Image (cartoon, rainbow over all chains, first blue to last red; front, side, top):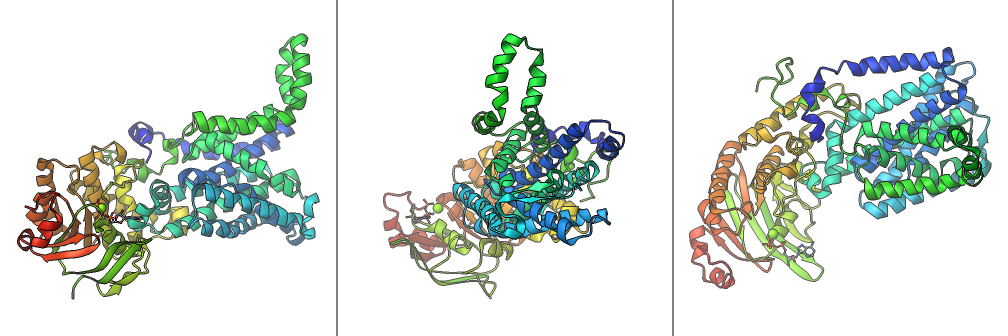
Length: 364
Length: 256
Ligand SMILES: Nc1ncnc2c1ncn2[C@@H]1O[C@H](COP(=O)(O)OP(=O)(O)OP(=O)(O)O)[C@@H](O)[C@H]1O
Ligand SMILES: [Mg+2]
């Protein structure tokens, strides 16, 4: 599937121990940072946003990258997860006394989103391409207006007073879990089915792939993790409203997917990190701090006309970035390529003559 | 019992009758050919047999079970497999993955085993990788396993299509113009290959072909189609001397 990287498997096979080491080191860091205040609160917040965005990007890539659809529904699934989890922690689960119940709420948010993904996947049986994009857009708008019209959910004013339960270690846990699960899914018969559907849906059916089942599963896994990300997001922000999960949110996730590259988990992680950091740098106070070295003659007009209006400029810059990406680099930073670390050994070595140091290939 | 029995199958595209009252009986182990001028409805018959189109009329029985109304993946999982007139490989995927995908229905693990890579996952993946490599080796393209399918030369892409079709584990193999675009030398090799896989995998084969050398060389029985209607059916010798067939082919490639 990823020829360029696969051809170099021999060189990288020896470094595979690095991955578990990095994962454990990351876990340690995620505990240490808040414990010893290694970074200030703002940077810790950005780190959590990075994590949440990684989950969103990797999960959307499943549908928009690996399967080659163009779904706009991701923010909708995110909001379903956010509202479900927030209601549970505010009104149902005694999280005050039992903080360990929080992951259950997150899980429930994911399951709720996964359930509603059926609405999208069943329509995608017969409809593809532009039409599916329109249907997922409709889904996004319906979710938004339904929430706006339910008083119990706070209507258009939103739901304030959510507890701050998302911590850096929890974010880290969910990032690792979602990347691992999605990677496993990709490197399974279902994942190969997803790729086959992108290539040629009829030919997939004729090669025994149950395309309807594959689509249901793919949308469900993708939506589940959008829901998880929404649940985490709600418990960082501590306030959610329908406006938080609108088309702009979906656009952000799309940019991260296409920036990092389609059909690439490593790419999605890169895309999410780069985009989130870029977005933070574009905040007026941050941009002003970065450009403070400029002489006043230049800085003052730039500040007055541009930096102070970045909130509005952002709405121009980000969609423009998406258009430029699609035009000039449709495959993103590492589209269709993968770090060999993310590829299971079995897949990495498949098709190569058995390496002397392993016994993967059984005698024929 | 015959392996395949099509009775009174008809299919229309709008007002166009692409296949008209088609009848066919295939016995296990037979190698039969369908010939006919361009647009005669040959590929449409393959599409009806494999469920790509749903026949409006008639019945198609395979090993006793009715195929009409089943989806393509259900039909192919019942061990009917095919290649395509215009090569339809998964171009951006590796040669090996093309063959692995065709094992989909034969892989026993379920979604939860897939997302956690537990249970039968590893054993099944290993089994399928090994089987796929064996198939590629039989068709002498195993050294290209990690190559992207699109990078293969045309003749090898045709070979890969056959490997992929065999991966389904077919009893009945449908080949749609397997010799299209091949030179006489390649056609000889292909004839040998078809004979070999037929014996090796115990196949019943139905093939569409314009290349008379191949058709007359390996088919035991022929069916001639013209404007959707069956013109004649019989041994290659009978077909070659059938006046109706000669007439239909007038201006086309001469038979024989
Ligand atoms: N999807 C379709 N929609 C409408 N008409 C079609 C469709 N597929 C085939 N046809 C028409 O049905 C008739 C039979 O087509 P078919 O492809 O079966 O012919 P064929 O015998 O395979 O020809 P060839 O030797 O050129 O491959 C032709 O007139 C063709 O134009
Ligand atoms: Mg044809």
